[in-house]
Image (cartoon, rainbow, N blue to C red; front, side, top):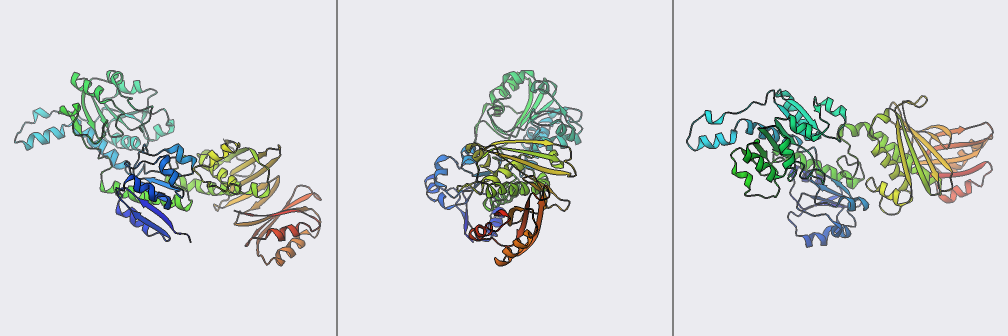
Length: 532
């Protein structure tokens, strides 16, 4: 088996490195702090790369990284990676969004409590040899309104815990479903303005994008309640520090807790002048548990990417959470195998693909299933690299239109079904459908209008024949002469005496020469072996 190589250039927990080194046929090189020129000189040797925030992944590096399949970012932010360029080149970019969520959530709550109860200033006061309780009159969280901007992973964790504190929790997130608000017992606000006007405490948990940079500025501070308390443990620059400074100086803002800063590292700032500002040096993920989780998670992500498996935290793929992956993985595998069938039976270029999800699968997020089908469709005909990351890009580049829709109703007797209609450039239609059985097995249940019931396996013989007596015997003789074992055989027809379709699951491949001779036999119209 070919030796594959992973390069680690930024520090991750030793448990992650150990996980990688246990993998057979994988060489793991650790070069912490490697210089840019040295990295450019050696990156061409590696299939996987693990970084943090300091290493830049751009076109210059990717031009030299001819073997690179996956970049693992140990942490959340991917600002240092050119995602569109990586996607075009089929390079998976994965991060660890869940690994430090608990740590970031708990620090957020720590900053809320530290402000409300003056913990930091009281600690300093006492250690300087003073004693005065009245100077540190605080405020309870109980019965106060907490406004959460961004109800993603960390925002939802904060909401769950602050509900237990007896706070009224409201949130603004235009990209989150109403069901998620209900699940976390959070009142949805339709605008940021509404949230700012109602909140006693405000915490932000959004990514840093063009849309969110500076989303809390002078205008937003003026909308807030008097004596509001604010936390930012998400990303620097989401809140304009000068606006917070003016709010503190005017007395509009009672206190601020900040873990992330407009510039890092940061040793001084106007905000640090205030006793009612609690600051920490970007330690949201700085716990033993978080760093272990980050190291192990990113190592597993890179292994998955190198081995061609699904990477749940790939940032240039639809997000699949671990609990969702278990349920949808059989459909992903089935769709990819269904996709591989077309070009092995047909040579006509594809113009349009219509995919319909019926029944139980229609309730799931099927974006990844669609991508898996496209990957399977293009794999037999594309000599260059094709994977889950660049499949949609390659399809668009090839002029293939992709439509998909979800219908929650059952299709005939199927509780779940994927139906696919492929239109080629000549206007001809090819159809194939599959389902997941009660045993969790993928099955092909229809192909080019024939009803079948076949498990897709590594080697399959498809043949069309005249519906006349003796053909099965002819097929058996041919297979026997090729010394190939047959696992199962399925015969389908539309009308008596018409053309029939035969599908055999076979243990080995049959040569093209043998197939060419076989189709010369009377009553055999065509025959092809496909590999899945």
